[in-house]
Length: 243
Image (tube, rainbow, N blue to C red):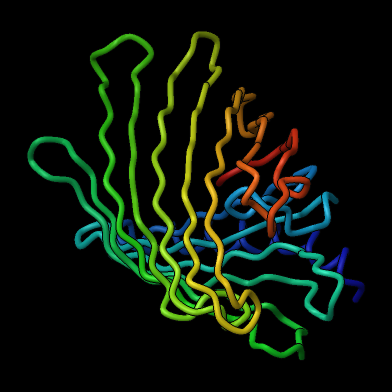
C-alpha cells in the first residue's frame, strides 16, 4: 500500500475503533483526530520543507483517574530517510478545586525509516497548567507549560521548552488564539554550540459542525533555524476533525 493511501485509511480505522470502545465501557474513553495542514510546524520550524502534512491520532483516557495515553503521526520531510514522525505519549491530568487544570506526562518522538546518525528519536517530560474564565466575555482560556528533554533531536543534549497561550471564543463559533514559545537547546552532536529562539503564532478558527477550519500566522526571532527564520515564518491553513 502506498504511504499516501495508508494515511488516508488511518482516520477511518481510528473512528471505528473509537466507536466500538465507547460502546463497551463509559469509564474508558477513546477519541480520534485527523487533519490536513498546508505546513507542519514543530515549535515554529517547518518539518515538511513548507509542504503539506496529513496528521492523525488516537487517544485513550480513563475518566475516574485522569490517566491517558495516545499515539499521533504525521508525514515529515527532512531531506533524509525519515518520512514519518510517530509520537507516543501518556500521563495523567485533573482539575483543582479552584478550577485550574493540570497535566503531567511523557512523550516519545520516533522518526520511522531514519538510519541517520546521530539518532533522531528522543523523549520529553512535560507539565502544564490551564484556566478558563467561563463567566467572562469571550470565555478566555489561558495556559502555560514546560517540556524537558535530556537528549534532544539529533543527540543535541538537554533542551527546555516553555510556552504560554491565550484562547478566546468569538461569536458565530469562531475562535481566536495567541501562542508564544521559547526553545533552549544546549547543543551537542547536531548543533555543537546550541541554540535558542522565541516563536509565536496568531490563529483564527471556525467550527463547521464536525469539521474545524483554521488559519494561523507563525513567525520567530532571527535565532530560529540556525540563525535565520526562513523556515519559521508561515501562513498555515488546516482542516481537521475530532470524533
